[in-house]
Length: 254
Ligand SMILES: NC(=O)c1ccc[n+]([C@@H]2O[C@H](COP(=O)([O-])OP(=O)(O)OC[C@H]3O[C@@H](n4cnc5c(N)ncnc54)[C@H](O)[C@@H]3O)[C@@H](O)[C@H]2O)c1
Image (tube, rainbow, N blue to C red):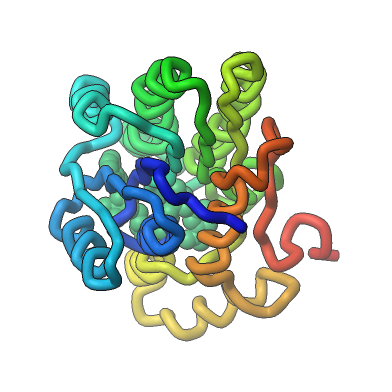
């Protein structure tokens, strides 16, 4: 079960954290993996890991917010069975402390970046007779989090685009789902703590761990396992769904 043999998978932001775990697992399951990365060195590092394990992978240096570059990458890849829209950035702030530039930056990567990849991938999937899309949303799409104005905006948009694409391409055999993780321990989290809570890293790490009722952060591999299920043929009946992967954050935080 959950084999991706013979499939081509494009993973954005596959050079780090959750995207890296997805790239490694998809390659292990037989997919030819294409990583779209702003940080080409990080992407190349993951490609080397995959090749060392006997898998097949390639990195494409591109900024997902740039449509022409994204379209060129997808044209070069040629066939896309699975798209994982994972690249994302964070911002901490409420409406008063989020500048226009902050809002725009988060929008460009998290919203427009995902749209650009959908724009490029869906025609290829249609022409091939189908495909599976997994979008990385967040609990921020579903609950009110403190100081996450721009980030919540972007993840709410991911959730809404997931429904829209799932609806529009029911007849084209393209499934589209999203995953909404709570805090997952990745460089994204370490960078966020270092940037916003310098000197209080250990204390904040503990606090963030316990904001999940289960008492810890998630692991990238745990997100990758769900992404694999949603990308696989075994999930053929699943579309237009969002899957919280949150240690009880949404339903058990009483
Ligand atoms: N880590 C968490 O707690 C958490 C929780 C919920 C959702 N998410 C979401 O999961 C996704 C991955 O998060 P992560 O924690 O693995 O992050 P990360 O920072 O470890 O990795 C993100 C990767 O995306 C790449 N990237 C950033 N901007 C890009 C761009 N414009 N074009 C191409 N690549 C770009 C980065 O170079 C990096 O390699 C994000 O969408 C994030 O919002 C993360």
